[in-house]
Length: 405
Ligand SMILES: [Zn+2]
Image (cartoon, rainbow, N blue to C red; front, side):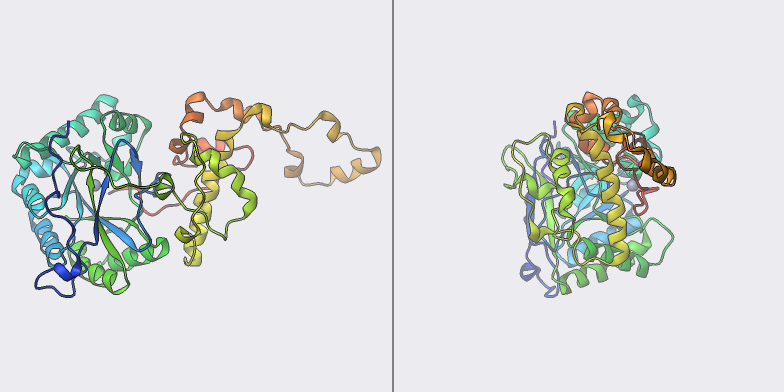
């Protein structure tokens, strides 16, 4: 289907030392080959899995091009740093500027797709409408490449407007949906300084990950040189991601390397029993958490709060998703029969303390499909979760700008 998928094949990673004329370039430290079918949903902004990066490894992604005025400058900057990235291109943009697509390919970057028209409400389109956006986008990029090859099977949903339908279709088609690990808000009317600050702050907070940028913004052009220079200065390494092909097997990895939020010693151990059920329903073994990969250490307090909110929200849903009615300790009625003498005390207990409902009904609400696909539901907002989460109400998840991208 994705005949070729050759974008970036010939251009293997160029270490900084091999960036002629640019001794200070960060270069590209390695090429990561991934099998989209093995991990169809990646990016911790929305999903439970992300690219299997080592600490201090960064993957650059640019959306919405090609737009010559800015995309060409982005390409020049990346070339000056021997940096390889992934471009999520819009079909309509490619139709208007097919040469721009070829420039990206010829520079060795990975060519990926981002729908035909960049609909702002992708998750509200009909299934046919969503399919058409995806298909037309791929067709336009394929046409622009004009060498008989197709773009990589990497796909990013506009505005990260995911839905079960879109994900199911993409997965059936062999596409890998890329969310991101952190944005830099460069689609917003902020200064290039702000873009730089956010990129570095969020990267420092996570320690590694997929950076979401746009190659159609002046502020991104202005911020990128400093981002690349500082990445190098701070010891980060760029990773170029390409899809596996029959001739190019996927880089060997362990399932745990793709997992969201590796275990941290700062997390209360009492919560751990819930994790494996959530994360590994489809695997036989429960990977041991890697302390060295801790995602939550050394983060700013504000960011920790945000993570905790996200984590709690996820877990509150995990709880309901993994509930197995027979295993639930439903208290016997006799438990609540208190001696006459203490009943007075009960009258003064706060209302919330008396609202102890059996949690079994929540479990009954979980369909077989939900139970089989817990990771998908982990990324919904608080609404559905609140309905299910009787054990613990879902907290509102506040993530940086998912609105328009
Ligand atoms: Zn976009």
